[in-house]
Image 1 (cartoon, rainbow, N blue to C red):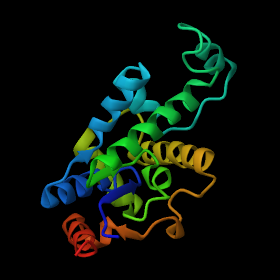
Image 2 (image 1 turned 135 degrees about the vertical axis):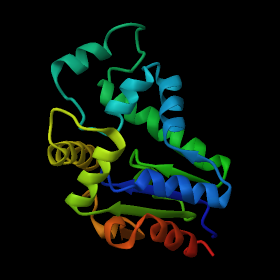
Image 3 (image 1 turned 60 degrees about the vertical axis):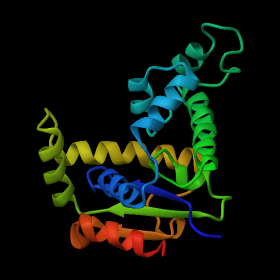
Image 4 (image 1 turned 90 degrees about the vertical axis):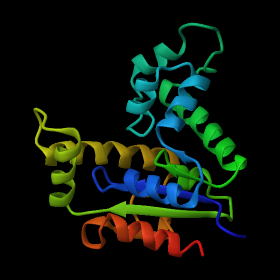
Length: 199
């Protein structure tokens, strides 16, 4: 079956979002990143900022997360933790978006969520620390933490989240169709390589 869905998983700062957006632009198909967050927020009842912060990060299994799940409308989250409820909504939204037609989906474990589809190309974008550190400072500015610490913390949260919900190792080449090093190849070449696989 011809590829319809491209999922982009990425190390923080590697340019995965930029690559995904350009692939979508070149193909003239929808690009889901912030739009996905907004849809999950709409269906879950959580604020977009909460979804953005917690949708890809390490699940919180503290008592507080379970206590919070019992608040509000009875049965609202069926006794699930906030993290598990968010994961459930996220899965449903991603599957619905994929069913609508060709698109590019960034992050959110979409590669795993859509694993049973034969029309997906699953891409992982990575790069060395220096490249990513320089890039996040240029894009997001300085912070109290060093760029290296910010990268390590964000990637660690993504790795734990991925392993928790998929049982697989985040970034392991065998989990994807292609892994691209944006530092050595360059952003534009990564775009071209992904597009070449769809011909």
